[in-house]
Length: 183
Image 1 (cartoon, rainbow, N blue to C red):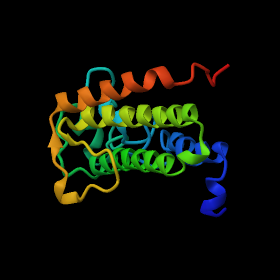
Image 2 (image 1 turned 135 degrees about the horizontal axis):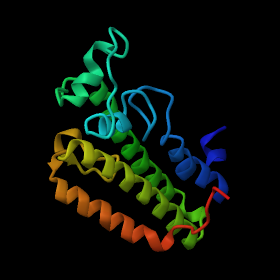
Image 3 (image 1 turned 45 degrees about the horizontal axis):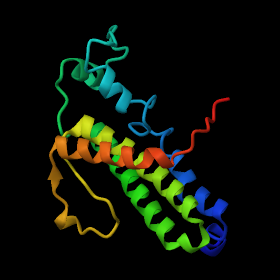
């Protein structure tokens, strides 16, 4: 469909700005998705603690020492899985920023309450991904638009990112739907 058709009604605007972000929460690719993907966020949050361990039986589950390195805290910044996870999380933050810009660009087709609700939902999703970045990497850049030049991007402290996440969620909460999708 053309860009004109993708953003011609409030429903299409929602689907192509907010709705598409939900597809980024899961993944079938390694190290991507919020949980359940091989060598991803769940694995780094679980197998680096005493919550779980994958025992190695001969050569089974050795996987180049990946699981053992997690458990023994011997992973490094050069691990490709960490780079893939970083790319996934930050790419999703930038997709949220792009969605917010699209919502602003097409606001003339939305009622003020739709604009607020849609933008709040995107801001809440972006906060979720910033929380994951903060939790996994501590000092991360805080970028809230797609126009910031790379050379201007600077890491922020964990407390600054946490405050941003809390402020975003508190601002978004009154405008989020109370409906549940799991009835």
